[in-house]
Image (cartoon, rainbow, N blue to C red; front, top):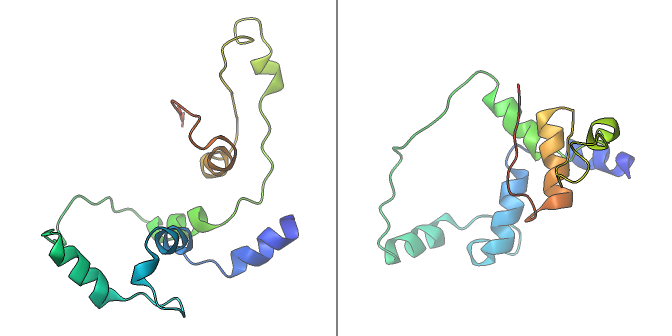
Length: 125
């Protein structure tokens, strides 16, 4: 299983996950070969009277492209809850899960296992 994920990660691009979701949600904007049909997409937006603008808020930092790439890869780690912390008397019935690990890996695991079930995530740096 990990071997297959490693192999799949070699073929990933920074926007692979977003494009897969976009293709799934909006297949009408893609050809049979998987090419994006920009002209059809622009026509769709103009029909809805949406103003296309390149201005907006943006966060720029060194390593942003690499971070996007890392977020598109499948996790190659195993994360387990901190059993000792979770079994303390004050935490036994809290329904909280305490995880120690890399933020990106922890969020990927939560996305796969707890999608739609989480009310709040607290990340401490």
